[in-house]
Length: 227
Image 1 (cartoon, rainbow, N blue to C red):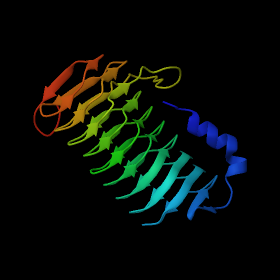
Image 2 (tube, rainbow, N blue to C red):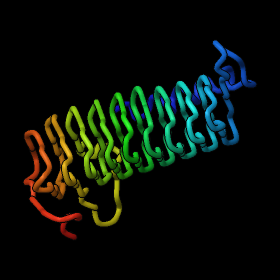
Image 3 (cartoon, one colour):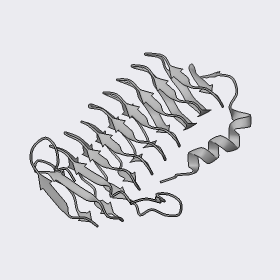
Image 4 (cartoon, helix red, strand yellow):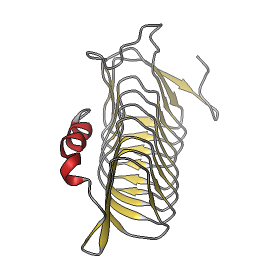
């Protein structure tokens, strides 16, 4: 998980790269230092990048790289992007989204709604990950976040929850134990690797691969047991 990559690249190049919008192959890039970005419905863009601000993509919009440092990323239904990442902010995609590469944040949660597809990995450090009816061709990775592979979702390369290292996951109170739920008719084809204590709940209709570092608790019904 390249936790520092986005922040390093954006901050190191902001003076030179963050200029006025420019045209490239009929797809307009929008680059800012301060301020949010809105991609209009049904419009095609190049790269969308800001340092301090959120990014919103209206229904049917498409873009190449979508990146911010301090801000969330919100996409309505039927949005397409190549890569999506932030450092401090949540990421939320509506129905029928298409992300060709990775979807990642450091401090913030990720939610992806029904009918969507992610071609790469979905990752956070401090933030929950939730899927509903979504296919992930890579794997899910986090350190301190809960994970819900919701109903009818599929993850092709497994789940990994890393052991906290350095200041990541440093918690001066009681340490929260991540909760991992594999919901009804969900499939996780790759290994489930847990380098720290987790609570793992797997629906009776779900299918999972090998598990290391945790013991699965099976459940029936629409929701898993409460902790």
